[in-house]
Length: 244
Image 1 (tube, rainbow, N blue to C red):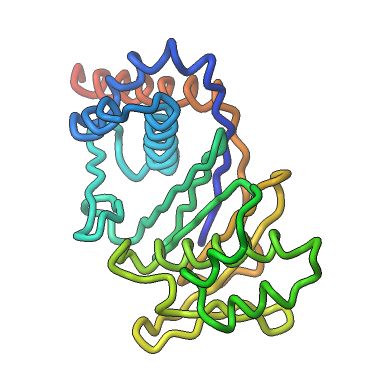
Image 2: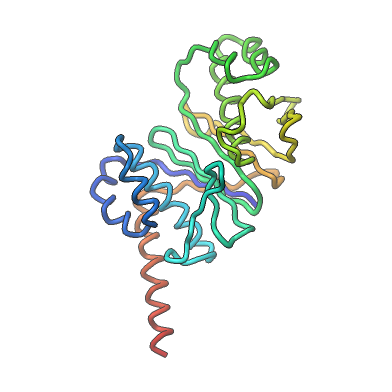
């Protein structure tokens, strides 16, 4: 089972809440957030961690003080001690997306902006570059970002980070099917691409087949309120049990 959570950050309101919210995350995460020189990056990372912690608690997997988010040797985050809970997050501008699944998963979102399509020669395989070049002129940019997000989602699902080159594999399209060709990284993958946010492309890669993945939109204020309420409720319940 795979689900996608989507949230738009309100940068103005998060400024005054960041000091409060950092109390609920690990020291490692807090130090990483404080090290960013660009405020937007700090807020993106903070809300992303609050979102994944909220999901973990909402699903009754762990309480907030039990959550240990670790990283593999390539930097992919995972939840310590929970082998059947996988997650991956991405953000672009004010949007955050988070995919959670019972199997390996990767997700990517990108704002559609003008780009010199010739950069595709550096990152795409010959067949992928031809796919963009053969597209109608008004769709070339859309095709570029479809490929880019699909490739990023695949890399993030595999979990090898920058150790894996974008040219090491090809994303292929056959009617309504999307699949990957790779001699170095053979994997069972299922791809999904989305155009649900205007001027953004989002793609998902999972090891779990579904005809449709549920998409949950969350408002920032509701996330923060519900996150803190969950913590307080669980702490109250634990305190009540201790008194018995």
